[in-house]
Length: 170
Image (cartoon, rainbow, N blue to C red; front, side, top):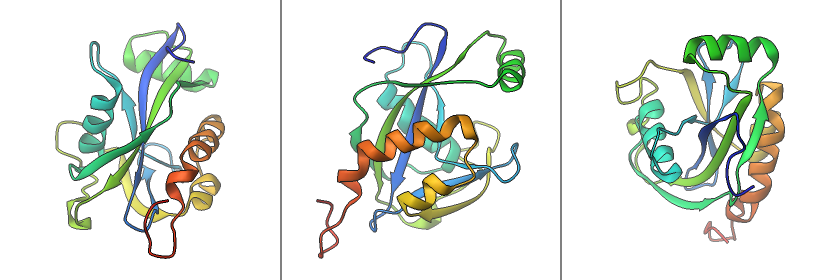
């Protein structure tokens, strides 16, 4: 899907990897026992790649990262009825779900840069974080309606997540 479908909120997802090709995941403050990769809305007139860099900074404080790849199409998921009602009340909208453009970024900084309070422009979303293997990410306690998206994202990014014996991305 080259353009997001009508009725879905434009959103970006960020698969941030470290030098060992482990993926950053964090626990949500507002959904107990739920972990996810960073994500967030695309502002009007904003390019998805710029939104991904902004959202990563806002949610994790990370500014030392380079874009390696992107899923070349939009991935959409529907909100379950109770989530749709809550979010649409919060956002003042009537979105069916979210259409996401996913980006793979390599973390190039020091771990001290990671700050779950983010850059201070938004309310903190995460309580803990960890570097995980792709398998651990899929097995995470991700909310069920996002799991197929995560599986597709990791399938697309798998060639970038494999390392040769020297530890270089193949």
